[in-house]
Length: 295
Ligand code: NAP
Image (tube, rainbow, N blue to C red; front, side, top):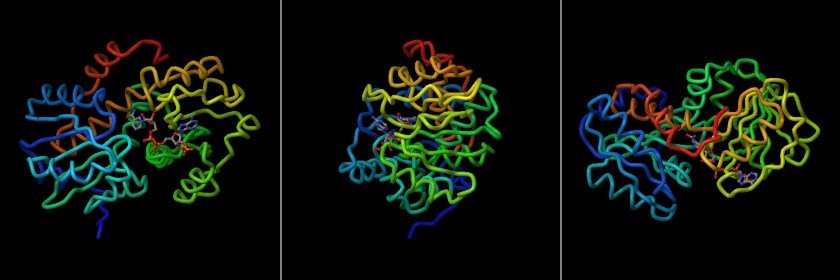
């Protein structure tokens, strides 16, 4: 049976100390997470052996078991494994349960505890690093996959106004709206009808279309004046959406690099009980990534 817990500090304190950490996904070779975690470990003088492990959905159970066997005590999980990770956990935080997505695993006794830090990472980036407010913003969420689920709840918790969800596969948008269960505040729209809607103050692209170099074909009428447009992806995958945002008159066109760094900091704190400072590694990665990815 899977237990649901919201508080992670006790779990963190019981897992502190040396041990192995990893990020699982496929593909994983180009993940920035090892670089981010190495910087956090140096900054806080914490021993933190963190490596990428390539695993398909079929391989994940075995790879995670082998990792635990070899001293693994914590892991991040990325595409396409976040929902699989949620199923494998013995206990799971309320945040991860709502998102049906686990991106941070903590070894606890003979099993894994699951957390989701993506939503907190997004909100920290927008409100902390970018110093923008989300409260009351009429928000359009594009996508209904694992990341969209995580950020939908986080945005609502952060006080956005109405949330409209549009997804290529309409049923998944409906399922997310049903899971949220706030019909007076959360609506779904068919992607093909987006041209009829407009005036959004915040548009969050949580699709993976940019990774496949596919255009979202969005109407410019979607945006209210000075709207924030945020793509969860970063680097080249975000260029198409950010170019559209600028051409549609967005006040801010932001990629997901800051979210990546902030969700990693959340995970690091869960594992080690200390929160790293994120500005230096964010600046380093911003300089390293191809340009044109932030306003
Ligand atoms: P996912 O579960 O595979 O979901 C993918 C979503 O994209 C689905 O809603 C899918 O729609 C939609 N989609 C894919 N191709 C599309 C297209 N051509 N046109 C329209 N919609 C399309 O992936 P995920 O884990 O949610 O990740 C989504 C994005 O967020 C990725 O770019 C990922 O890199 C990024 N992300 C960033 C961070 C960060 O820290 N910055 C963290 C997590 C995720 P269907 O349902 O119709 O298939």
